[in-house]
Image (cartoon, rainbow, N blue to C red):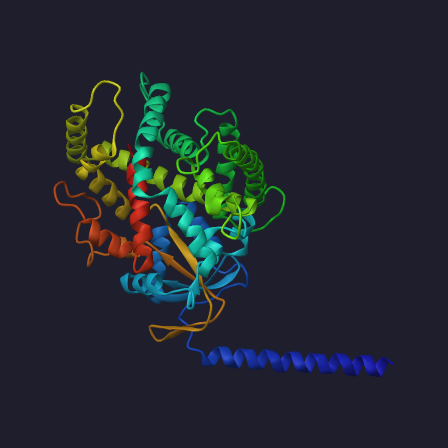
Length: 437
């Protein structure tokens, strides 16, 4: 009996060695990008997180690109990853369809945002969910949101800014954008639950860029728990919205984002969204809409504070629009279209300090790019700053903002988004422009 056990273990060991050698030989034949995967699971995650905490993430990227070139391999958040940088890489990424790579996010991301959000969908499911977002962001709806956002901004300035000798801009802007988001997404103009939702949301954001260890006292665990807390609040909102729709107290043609979700397909049939899909995509929309807008607004205000020329030009444009308004009259879509210089200043701010550090995709098959192979199942990480600060594309000095001729909308979007992403980027740009009113 002992001889049989020993012989079985020996056979298993030999088979394991053969399989290992076969896999390693196959890997070596593949022309992988330069760079090291580092320690399994951890890799370069800790160095990236340290750089982000020290506000040196862009330097971390530039150092890596200088060392390995615009294509390199590494391990991020537990997965083997290929970093792609540069205009050519952006063109390749944004023109590739779901047969080449998907938007599928890491398991840690799915644990926070769920598995039924837009980034996890492809094909017909992606088309269906995208249609709901496009309905919420169509021009006639955006025009209605301008007055609502203007009212929120006025109330916020009156409560938190007027009469103050000094203000701490960053937390106030985050509160303002969260209030606007709650009004537009959930119809919560004044609601006591918003304070708890904001606290939960802050914990979620802390955990997105953290080591995905679901252990007590870690940022990731707090993020997962906060996600559960927001979902409980969202479930109450969903049930109230559904009751209002069924009783005729709310209209499916005009409303907040959740109302748009619940009205999809008339609320019944294969086109209708499940509660899980409504919650997952509401949470995703909160993250996408809040952080990007907050960052742009804060750094735009900072630019106005340190550059007198830009400040004077923006002030002059805003005062010109204000002179055409009656006291207390809200801004309109037409007023926003007159804010040409203000919008160009915001675009230049987004170029110099991208509100999105980067994102990941996943290869659905072996991909050949620039002479290298990206194996099936690997993550593909792209970052915005290497392109934005490339003087061959944007010759402007990094420490200055042109005061009369800033980056055109066309070239700005060309760098940010290619192919199918360009339309999506245009919508995001329009909605961000509206949120500044």
